[in-house]
Length: 338
Image 1: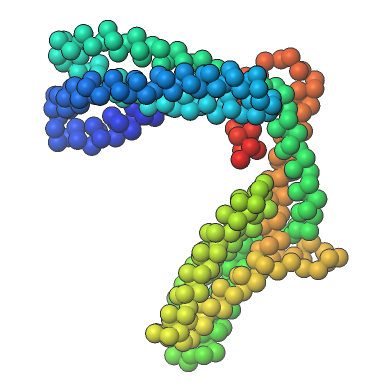
Image 2: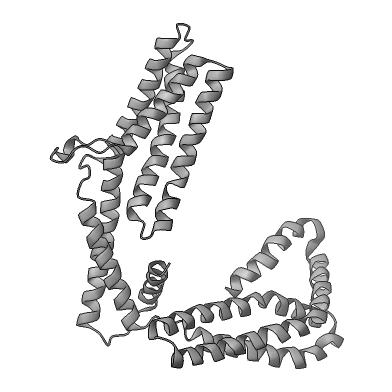
């Protein structure tokens, strides 16, 4: 996190101004900025250090009075916030160091800044040590993912077995053909059928892509908010196309507007339609069925990964996980607790 802050504060602005000001001018600029930071660092320490101490007291007290799950969550959250706060101070400390190097008379402030900074880093390290995803929590997270994926696989039984690329292309072509046919019915003066079909194909391609994303995201989401967000992009895209078609009908060309509307209607119908029960899945060439197939593949991978994690914990409960395994477990637990 410190590297990210340093990159944002120094690399991005200084790299853009280096060609105009030069290294010496940028160094003087950083030195002047550090002198201003020295004047403000006192109240910043007065806020940060007591806050970190308060976090530490809350974490220790939370272990005594809260339920274990609440205490673990509080420890992780405050630990991450403490590390982020301390990392945000890194650019200020670097600017102070540059100011002291440029003008050694300012180095006296380091006798105050360095000890307080050391206290901040000590508290951040201590609180960051609580950002530990205990083995029981990792096992609980894996079990939760396992149960969720198993339930989702049951719910996604009705899905297409047709190849996804072929379904994608077929829906785009059918949508574009429906739009072209509508235009030919309502208009007798078409300049170029090939160009018109190409434009409608691009429109259908974008609609199919966004609707695929909506179906996939909806069926792989784990909470109600995620399900609502999953359809924001496709709903917005379809509303934009509807507005475009209505604008064409009212202001420009009725046939063109109806063609765009027909293309969107075919793609939307394929997105919302599911065949009746008992029909062979190979005949399901809808976006809904194919999107459910993609979602089932993703959920199946989660199922396998969580099952392997549970088996690993049961077969080697005392073995220390590698850094990559701990990071993956932490990320999965954060997602599962959203």
